[in-house]
View 1 (cartoon, rainbow, N blue to C red):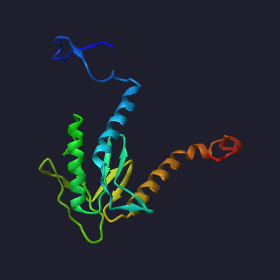
View 2: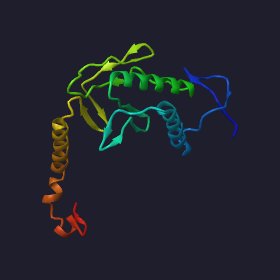
View 3: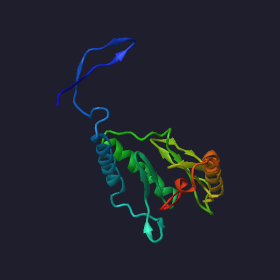
Length: 180
């Protein structure tokens, strides 16, 4: 489909030009194409990589959700190789990995430091980070996360106090599959 675009800046519309790549905003194909594109980048990145970390006997090299990618490695050298490969494969597909948004976290009893670079820039070393709403800590502890979740649940139940104390019948408050 032929599509033209123009830039609107300081209340002035610039000259029209033909749009030759991309999808229209809101197009249902957009997230699907993005996922396919990122999947291909990761296939190239992880090709012939033998992971050194496993969970329950299953090798683990990365975690991904939408455009968030977490590389997982058993050593600083392995993580540097994976980082370099991700940057190179992204560039090969015309994409760029943000070094400002990229962080490094070490979770080990023996090692507490790592120096990973991206395009010769050192990445920030963090002691915790948020992933899919959960805060992960370098020591693997979940005490803070559990306390946070309990506090959020307590606040949600407290907001329902008026409903529990209202004159609404017990039957309306309780359905056949269990409590609300």
